[in-house]
Length: 141
Image (cartoon, rainbow, N blue to C red; front, side, top):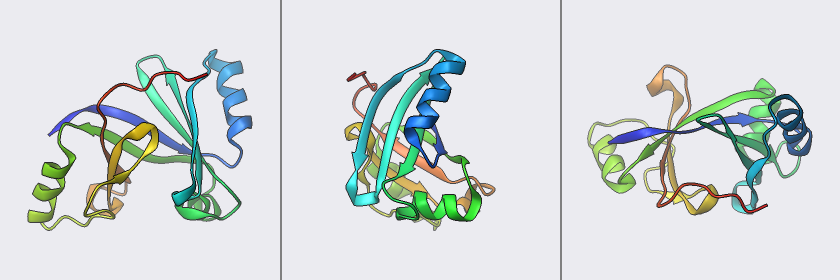
């Protein structure tokens, strides 16, 4: 089952510029910045109060799902992520319910997490990510 909100995903065209805005406006710096080449994405996690925000930038314009999202919708809210205790069990349950999933098996996510996405049509047009991680994100900067 769901343990808590893990993070809010925001698509940006320029990660460095977005990080500068968050630092200037809110005084926050990234806990972690990483590139996931297999999904053509560079990402940063920042802590804003009690909320973890994931800023997502395509590694090149139009690349991957984030690039496509930016081309179609522009910058802004991309997804809501929920922390689950056992992603395999959650996916098994959703598959048994015939829920439309982007990922029927877990894949690697940021900060060594395991993730899967539920199609937005299922959840009132909100792209939903399920995240299983063994530990909280720690800063590496």
